Image 1 (tube, rainbow, N blue to C red):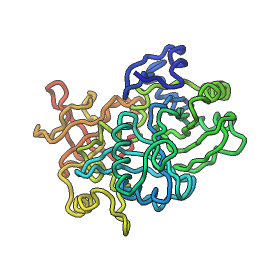
Image 2 (tube, helix red, strand yellow):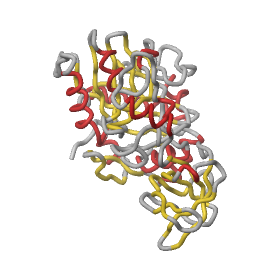
Image 3 (cartoon, rainbow, N blue to C red):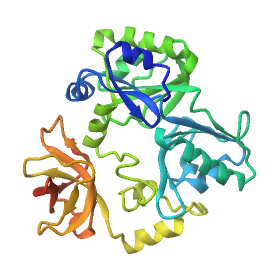
Length: 366
């Protein structure tokens, strides 16, 4: 099992650790609800060094990315980030990713931890068709094992990070980034986030991890900075209706079904993988749609529970579900027949043999 450059600090803090995507990761520290509310109201730090980082460089970089991603990479400018997905050629999704444009011939892809190897093989395979080489110093390079990443999230996050930066960062726009020193370390500072609570991500080389960690906690002391585990990261992202690969989207779900039509751009000349399939789905409709729902009856919807029409006819499964720490009510996401996808529609969740009422709601939940 792999460790991150910060694992020793998690263990010293008494974290509950568990395997996640091949890494020994902190699941919780003070408890999921406490950590969740810390991020919503103050500031918390997540170790997300298990995420993957893949460089795409050279004169054919844009052509490759326009081929393998659903969004329009040509719309990016230096310092801009784009949320996208990689279609798999069978109408499903290889992964959902972030695309960072460093310059016209240099891009950084940030991918999900569990998919690094799969994504890398897919990118190399498509790149090879364009004559692009993979490896150290080549046009395609997997730097995942060399980079660590901290996500500092919450309404007070940027006040903390500002103390480690010599230039103003508190007013950086959403989905932008800068290459700049942070705590004296060469870093990429980006404003994306997976909690909907504000904040940033800091990418540095593994050898700078200790320096960054110590500076962050020194800067965060007056603001009550806390360690946050992956458990709260999941409840935070679900409250905001953000998809989790492996739950809400995967190799069998299309971005159109998943409500990701907004990152599926049919730009002129963009011959991306599965374009024809997705154009057809957009024009003709799909047989299922990902929706958010809120429990009406008392109960918690869990991943894998069946979703049904009010008469009990099964039509899908819960892809993500929890008790919302902010709303104090059960919330979830899952695929339903289009007739039941409209906001306000009543559906049912099968919980231990009982059909509990739920209502389709507009995302985000909070």
